[in-house]
Length: 387
Image (cartoon, rainbow, N blue to C red; front, side, top):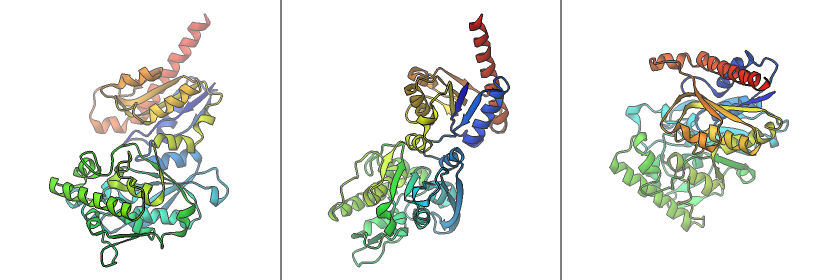
């Protein structure tokens, strides 16, 4: 029996690989001779780098870069395994590692000034290694600069009316007059960039980057209005400079408008995060000959069917006609929606009421125990069917 274990992480508790290992441990107590293939998953958000590195036996690279407030921070990216030549390698970057909200103390959150420069430095480090395929996960950013800092780090010149480089932060975009790509990193022209983007927000307006994501980054209503105007001005200048008007493309408002810069300036392709991850680890091919797929995430609810990891795994399992079950830390409203999509069963791991800290600390043992009970139920069903 071949069992694919492909969960997302359980946030604040276990990485996706740790989840997969706990599930395998529980199942092995009942099906000791089964073949297990652990493929830790992610949907482009936090944990994507670690999951993809673990799934491909890759490596983590640490780099000192510029943080959102201009200070130095230690960030990282991953190089996927399975490639023996640099030009075939794939690098995976999480924007949050260099430009994340968690790097800015709550009292200092100010999207007028926070910069994505560090994310550009990570991309530059990848390009300098000769890697020509980048996967960038958006999410958790502290910025609203539409990739201004990222572009500057890559040699793209964004200039004011006097020909001077813009300063840092989203508000600086109001002074933009000229976009000059003549000095950008030379290897960008040959680089394939895929952006893991699971939101559909446009750049501007009531559903745009500033209005929807600005408040969590420290923006007041007055700041939102000014930042939205700055993003609109950026798009206007880009259009006047001969670029396609991408401001209304779904997803360009992600990560404070980083999606806009990636698509407009770097010709990146915006895709659902789970689709990028599954393609990178050859998930469809790994499904061949499988008898069961086990997936999961920290919380299964009504939103899970909208592009989250369990839904992505289920979709591929359905195509391969392999039964799929899911294990979750807990259920939320609408959890049953994924059953309507073909998931055979879903299981929570929390055995009883407890404080959150206890629930998080006991996640691994509860996960293993739940997996063991699921396997025992399967074994019992096999025995009953054989009678």
